[in-house]
Length: 309
Image (cartoon, rainbow, N blue to C red):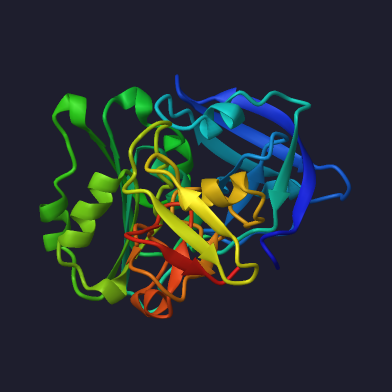
């Protein structure tokens, strides 16, 4: 199902999970229930202002969807908009989008969640078999940050809580060193945790992850200015040092689909046939980049580039 098709919805309930994290339940307006979601699915959520973000589904029971939003005070304001949602507020929801899935060939499964990355792990654990051989490691700075811990424990897997402030920080190297080659490793969390897990040496074919969308702060210098020439129309768009290519395109009235604005979801990817490209995304493979695809929300040109749009 196309990611561009959005369903009108309404916030039906909110509850604070911590000082910065709020669970938000939404229900469809023009249909009895949302489409059935699979474990690991996420959705694009659009605010009435037009701001869009991706959120893992922490629950899709009873035809409604539930997400958990962490307010990012240093971000660009998207999380703050959704975090402020109240019952009755309108939103627009995409059909479920596939994310991580279980490795059916693995003999054992180890799940690592860092902070709000727990939402992706909870989503992945929907409907797991009671016979699944696995365990969960949940890393947080403070015990109060361990939101949705009860959902993890309800999976039936052994859950290990690692609290940095209490001296029980997760030892990534030791954890990965103890895994057998036929163990599947799944992780989602802050970039530093994910980078450490990726670098720890577990076989890539047994490692699956879902990244956060980390957006730039307003006014932050992102690179050198450059110009994008649009091959379809012959127009040129100037991209300043403190703005993304996506922002510049939208500012000049060039329609581009987008969602996360953090180089994760792939919604804004277009072809850039010429120019030196600076790839900064987490959604494109080496093969994709070889085919001159570019994630306009984070990636840039090192000089003037051409876009097939």
